[in-house]
Image (cartoon, rainbow, N blue to C red):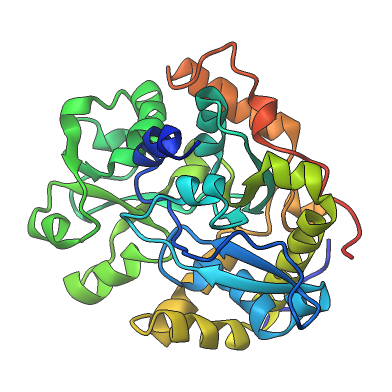
Length: 340
């Protein structure tokens, strides 16, 4: 237990392909309509299968926080082959779990979706290497084979190239399994701080070398709440209630995760108690949720300065156009205020 201080459709396909595994799954019709129980139905699409990294949202369902805010929330799990941006923009879901690079890319694609809060101050993306291979810093991986996903090409990989001299001939296709990495000690691979390191310890029997990219210059917001511009324009109160309740859910989950974990396991029976406990411990120990601006402004915090820093870094890396209006990717109107 922790004691924490409160402190249209086809057009979007190219963005989702670039986003790779970032997706959510739903067949629910566009909600925001009042139900017989007097609550507004809302669907939130996540970026992967249910896990501790989504805990605060499940917690808000399990403990009735969403209901207290007049919301009947359905959480739809994502997966590697599901197009979350299409679902969001088609109205099949109302909110989506996004990330910073994808949000700015949406601006360049002319897709009117907006990030209204960021639950993670640090993206949990990591690069993992074998021990006893002379790999002590990220720079030591220059020239080494690294398994990465297609999505990395528009997120952290260009920054690694610019900062550490990595080259494209180092890339190997990552298929979301640790098998190839375990089979070859000279390789490295991408992963999630709260997931792959534990799997490697259990299956490989060794302690991997783990580099959290957020601590090495990759400043993107992650596990965000996105919605369509039309939702903000037509129903800002719904957006505010969903943001407030989600933030409360995360404070609650960090204090006592059991209610949320029960729903996570119901949605994803393969998720073990050990994995959830490990995931939450990593989130806490590395300040994934409560660090940076969240320490003073609370969970969900974002700033224009942080968005601009990330945008400028990505322009330098050749990912975004310098003339892009990055401010269209986000709104600060729903965060940094007393929770309703």
